[in-house]
Length: 104
Picture 1 (cartoon, one colour):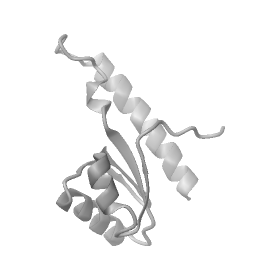
Picture 2 (cartoon, one colour; picture 1 turned 180 degrees about the vertical axis):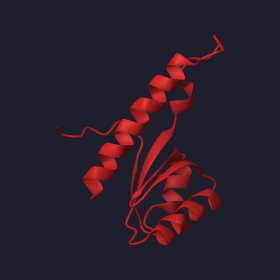
Picture 3 (cartoon, helix red, strand yellow; picture 1 turned 120 degrees about the horizontal axis):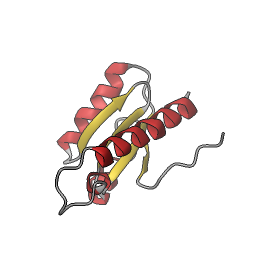
Picture 4 (cartoon, rainbow, N blue to C red; picture 1 turned 90 degrees about the horizontal axis):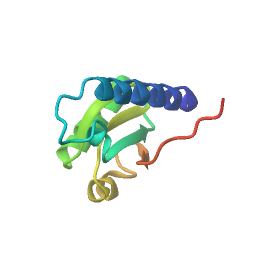
């Protein structure tokens, strides 16, 4: 189940990145600037309500949530400081800031 969530997140990130590259109107910024600090958060949630609680907790701690993908994934901008505060709480098990290598 987590593997499907990871693959969905990677696919979504690729789509969003290619969309940003195609629609960049500001030449002073790199089209991929929005991805700086983009983070994958995996949550050990048993329901959409628990995932929503984790989302609300992340934002209350200063993180920015962009996308919630049930049953286990949240994408957004989480600084290392916020990550240290939220890891292990509200079912938050993994915070990944580097590209995820998914096997075929």
